[in-house]
Length: 213
Length: 118
Image 1 (cartoon, rainbow over the protein chains, first blue to last red):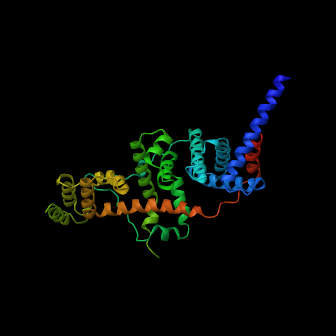
Image 2: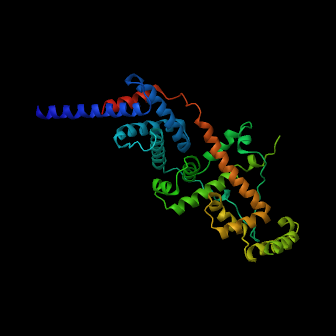
Image 3: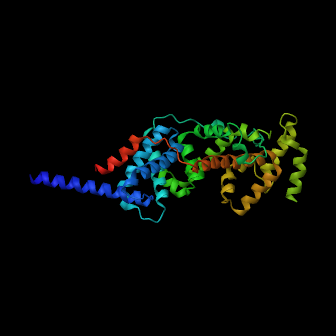
């Protein structure tokens, strides 16, 4: 009987803490009241899935990551110190969950990108020059199909390179933070970032060369 | 003076065209390898990330910029590198717009019930 009462108390306390954490996070995200929680949760999931999708490349996997990340965020809400915006904090948790997802998928064969990197001839010159049009990135992206092509190029990079590229150039994380998140040395992050950018440049060569019409 | 001499030799090796004039092409390669203050295309590529991030020390930056003035291929390479980064940024920057509305009800419900059932 005593054991049953203790267990009930523990469960009740956990339930209260969970609900409190949820309402705390919902309030921080601008919920008008308990009835507004569903809207806020839906928006947070949509935002986190959008971030995760950049990394995992698949909408359903991204939604799984977002669900895992949001539950984790609610459970850890008491650790949120309020120094960063709550949306930035959720963003970071979504990225971590997406990286965890990629790590679990680890068996995926890594695509070698050496063929996409510049090579040099016997005299030391860059082997194949790039032709670069005078269009701005904005103008290029306004062209038919360009967004899909650029997205395809980014997604075709190996996971470990795409991850560093996104963390640095999209999330604007420092080398130190990236190194910590990926358990790499800062110099290794830099090398991988440079290779990823160089490979992307090669993959985008047809778009970059296309002249103004 | 260094720049003048290099320009003269490179003018001889106009276009670094290996097919048309292998001798001139090799001569131009020698200039980049041997002349003080010159770097090869390979070294240029290795410096590219630090140059782009503004982390390249002054002396190396001068060598880098000198090479960029003299080598058309590397000028285009830098331009392609910058644009590839910018295209990546702008592609995702465009995603800051309206949120996708395809979050399934059961995922929303799962999060809420996971918390209430703790």
